[in-house]
Each structure stands twice: as C-alpha cells, then as structure tokens.
Length: 142
Ligand code: ADP
Ligand code: MG
Image (cartoon, rainbow, N blue to C red):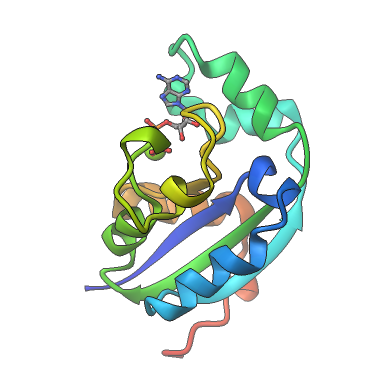
C-alpha cells in the first residue's frame, strides 16, 4: 500500500550531526521526503505529541528531552512506508535493535534513540497533521 509516515530526527540526532546520514538512508530505501522542517518543540507541544504515553513513567523525561533542542520532522512517502520506516529505525531500545538499523547505528539508549516513526496509518495521519498542513506536502503522485 502506498503510504505516508512521520519521521522525527530527535534532538540527539540533530546534535550529533547525523541528519544527512539518516535522510540518505530514507531516500536509499525508497522513503521519499515530501516535507521537511527543522524546529523546536515546547514542553507543552512535546506533551501533546506524545499524549498516548502520558501515563508512562518515562513521560516527563521523554517530553523534556524532545523539547531540549531542535528536531527535524519529515513526512515520508512510499510503498509500505510505515512498516518499512519502522524496520529501518530498528527496535525502540538501541541495544536490541538489529544490525544496520538507524537506532543500532546512532542510538545511545532507550531514552536517546535518535528517531521517531509513526506506527500505524491512523497515527501517521494525525502525526503528519501535527506538523504539516496539506500545502506543505509535495507528493510525487499528485
Ligand atoms: P517507538 O518510538 O519505538 O515507537 P514507543 O512509542 O513505545 O516507542 O515510545 C516512544 C518513545 O518513548 C521511545 O522512542 C523512547 O524514546 C521512549 N520510551 C519508550 N519506552 C521507554 C522506556 N521503557 N524507558 C524510557 N523511555 C522509553
Ligand atoms: Mg511509538
């Protein structure tokens, strides 16, 4: 299925200067960027974005980290984009991520795991809307 997904290069990825390397991996696996922005979330925005995790013990640390510096947000498009992007990212905990994945290569720990990716079509739609309006999206299919 042709899909869109939201990717975030988290503050640790931006700080360690791997934006280019990560976007190269997206492009080389057929995940085409159709919108890109460097931005910084407020703590409130980070809490809204990660609302689904609001009862988790890591919620405060996660939202502080996500608002601690600039991030790069991308909408990616491609065949099976949501799962393909999750495969490319690797497991949430970098120490458990497969060889060759982004989190294995650049993630320091489960708290600092470099990238975010949508996990299903409904969340992908909502997460893309969180950052982009329709006129920001430059689909190749339109
Ligand atoms: P993913 O980012 O792989 O979809 P989740 O949606 O479960 O993972 O969690 C969102 C983010 O919350 C993770 O990327 C990670 O930064 C953080 N997180 C998840 N689980 C933990 C945990 N047990 N301890 C600390 N941080 C966590
Ligand atoms: Mg998730």
